Image 1 (cartoon, rainbow, N blue to C red):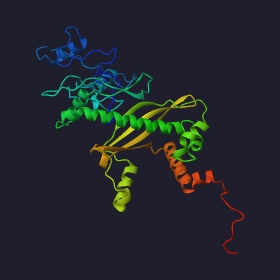
Image 2: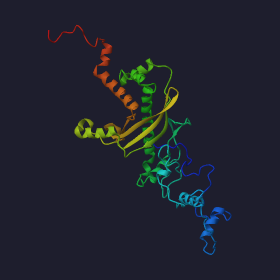
Image 3: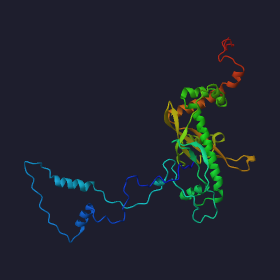
Image 4: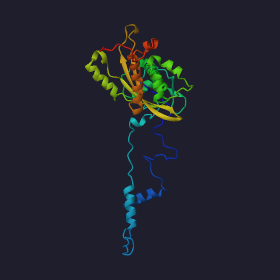
Length: 341
């Protein structure tokens, strides 16, 4: 889930601008003075007489600077490292921990042709350069093969891409909802959340100031092997109370880093997404069902936002907020009958 590519140009393994190219496996230039000295020393037929080192004067500096310089040069010189194959991590795009460039060409022994067209998402890039782009089915298939999923059913790749794009759009919609509530601060967020989730749109219209949040996705990271604390807690609760909390562990986890405009300054907010698969309903023709748990990370800021949104909704339902608005009554009745006469 959640694979994007910002560009098609490899960003790893290129030689920096102005840096000379490597010479692994090549002979040094004939006129290079550094290598000439080394070759002369390795040549056994060339014998040179070395003058005896001068005896330092007792009135001069006691440190033999010529020997000290040679020792420093010998200690700082680095042997040439043998060329090693690049690790998988070094080949990944740092923006999304995916391969920076995947070919649109068919894989080896691929018998079914896959589309190479890519779909634009609605998720703005953090650098302001348009929106993120989803991989084509062919790129998705190549990525799965490079990750070791060689048993992938090629006929299901197009459906996988459609589900992948749909889930990412849903995750972004949830993030935009969080940003709408809290991009102006905690107090502003409480004003929008105080009447529960069902009345959020009304509070948005009531407190409209003409400014909309403009979040953008800086980068994201897939962490399927790292269970979030909330997901782990739900698994424990499911073991204790299976009829209420019993569910399968999330099949994937993402961390999305979003840019939030706070008083003219861009602030990076991390969101955590747990992907759950659910049971298909009777009338859904056995189509897969997915649930997304999208919330800010448990930082001090994120924890406060989660508490405000959750507790406001629970409190509004607990006090019967909708009924009280239809039949306003004081919360504490001074003329109510006393229990002890």
